Image 1 (spheres, rainbow, N blue to C red):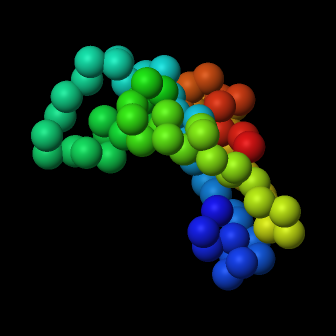
Image 2 (cartoon, helix red, strand yellow; image 1 turned 135 degrees about the horizontal axis):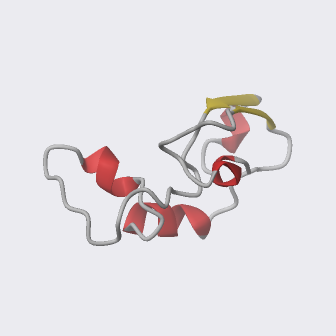
Image 3 (cartoon, helix red, strand yellow; image 1 turned 120 degrees about the vertical axis):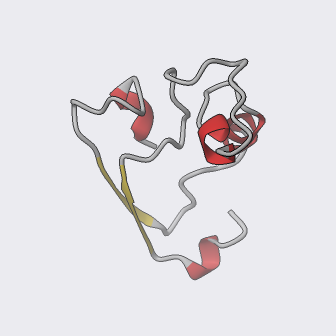
Length: 79
């Protein structure tokens, strides 16, 4: 949201903006903080959910595949 005034278009390929159910809530992998952040119950995803993710005036395009095996369910990839 703080950068919305500087962004005209957002293009995301298979984003985990809603988290994934493939990462358990108690998952811990110190050498991969991004992996831990992808879990639906992570503090990062929970904070992201509290913000407006599609600010007015920002066009977005989400590219995903029905066969994604990382961000599941696939519908979680969309705004």
